[in-house]
Image 1 (cartoon, rainbow, N blue to C red):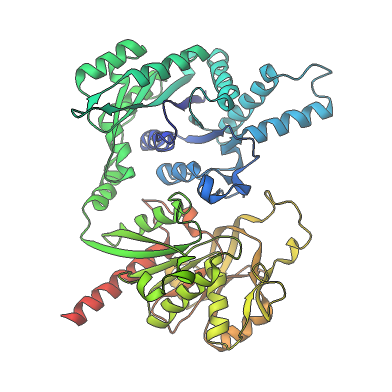
Image 2 (image 1 turned 180 degrees about the vertical axis):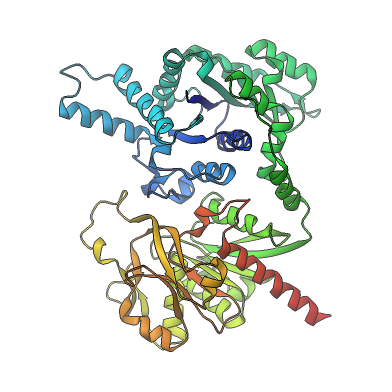
Length: 541
């Protein structure tokens, strides 16, 4: 029977439930268990697709095209699994399903209520994921903080699941804050006690407490938490800050969390093989080299807006034995008070990232031009590809006024235009070209060399594409199409062979990168950046 672990959070938001969930999944995956992660989000949006990156961080896209919370990215990276649309459940999805059922008459004339109808729909979705993925364990993270009114239906549903499935098949993990106060950094447990009391009022008694703290917890503090919160001392797991988030599973394993969970859920006892994971953590903590990559984007003021890109760059440093320092550059600044020479000073490579709308795009174009003209290794992602095409059309092909139909109405040269199938789309949510699509790579290109394959699949999230009317013109001037859709209708990748490393993709390769399997485009970029940095250093000597 599938086991179910529910992760809640208390005291403050953004406490690290996502990393805790992902790390716990890693511990179980190391033991060979099949794990299905799930995020239960209390917001009323049906999905994260229409939410601003400034407010909510990046929108993570799954293989099947679901637009989800960024925590699913943590799950995929840590557990090395592919999530699906069923891995994300929002209040909006739940109520949409309940209202549709009511309209069909499924409730036989009964009054539709939060209990049992809403909570039953939540439970149905949780159980369905376990069945669909044939999971040994489902780990479900409940968004928000205990005490939030929005989270109550989800908390009630997971409370009911213990009654439905039994104590031996359900487990509650509560992530909480242990603050320190005063000049002597006195450790305070009262916020955690109150958080657990609030959880108990709902009818949930936690089995494990993951205690976020700036300092190690003394034994007497752990015993106090155990006594007042009703969990065994070995289930009080200390979680202090670490050099890299990928060290968290190693810390949890050393604290005994993996064995505790296995025993508590009566799972088969298996060896925890962490050797490979420890090796990559060691490389991340003690690299031989350091490389700086500039990332030009529209939403860099929110560190979570490009979370997957940041992590993909960190992953790419592992096989190159290099720490990757990221220099975030707001594209607006390249239009206002900075020029690319100053903004990109000290950068060994450049990523021009995704985004929507006209704001800041000329700054992106300027950054691409600088990279192309100076030989700076360059990777364009989604909108970054489109900006590379616009820059090349203007400055190399002589198509002055070249632009995207998204940015300018009736541009002189619409080198980027709306996908034909998008012309009659009016709804914003879930209506883009979303999810995984195949791509054929041209033999002999940088793309084919990096991937080591002739056919690949990448995830997409866009409405606009390269205008085929200009493909020949671009190619005549040295920008080749190195990746196309199987029907040759869509440009998926471009590159400039005359440049040391200049490649861009219409896809979002960052979503498929893992610490144990860095994405080839990012790995290639960092490798080219390291080589450029070494070449500069050698020439100076």
